[in-house]
Image 1 (cartoon, helix red, strand yellow):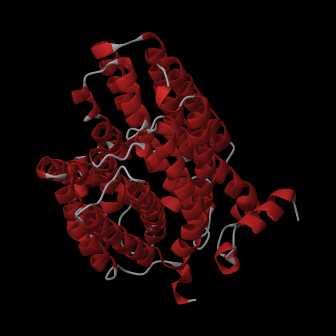
Image 2 (image 1 turned 30 degrees about the vertical axis):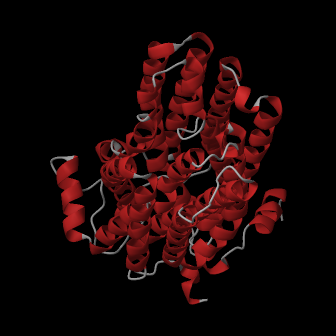
Length: 451
């Protein structure tokens, strides 16, 4: 047994039946590929912490004197920008026989974009700096788009069902450990007094992490796509063979003819409570007088602890039943949001007091932790539910649809926040409960569901 195989066997609960179904070359490369995918995803997730659109970039805008109106553009550009183009790019991606090279290109684009942000942080200020960073963020999102499309295929071709969720979970936990370290360093070295030079250095570190991610992923031994692109054997045509005249026609056909895909997108669109609630919790805490959460290091630290705990636990649960994981995590996230609104409304509640601050910190931590569960479950489900280019179409068309849904739901919740942040949280919590109920009726695709 090689060192890689021993290490992989210690980290992952292996599914021997599923591994036996893989071609011999894929079986031989499984331990090394698994470890490389964990490393590449860890580096990418760690880089995400250095350019977080909910924490780092708003803080940078404040330091650089960028108008506050620009801050509201960060999250929509970061999230929707990485989703909306995916259906457009799918016809190009499916022509690439080894999808790891698509991931490598996407990681390189992200590295260059973050390096540009670092240069702007060091040299720029005011409106010009804000515009420059937003433009770089648009390019960054396109690179992330390529990685999102390709990563599912690379994992699906090299890792058997029953082990994929653990790969995602391990990377999430490792990135959480990196985030904890980063949060502590920020708190110790600067806290609320971080200047532009320190943030520029932080972004430069992020650029290096994406370069390393590209290098590691390039070493994955991925089989060529001829056998994998045949269309999953379930009667559905592959995306590469689809003769639709446009991405819109292909997407419309997928929505019309594939009930499983429609269900997945519907449920995914309803499970936004864990992803969109945390910024509102931060806003509510500041309005209530909680000063502790205003520190950049505190946000990153809480997120890191949640990822460290959630990644490992949720990875194993996802391999048992990814749909039940999504349903359970979304239900819990909705209950946390409801509970926070009720507690904050109690007479005499003081967010500036230690107990009040603990309530907000705890809610933020729990929402971030549960979002790891929803995210790991969603990623595992889409890898398990389809094969080959059908999987690519699921990811690309689904993410494009989610880009639109995210803008709509984000717009509604933001409008409700004008009336009161509590209303936005209640709206998202209700959607989460509806989505959780819908997830129970999704087809079961996890190999471990019958164990």
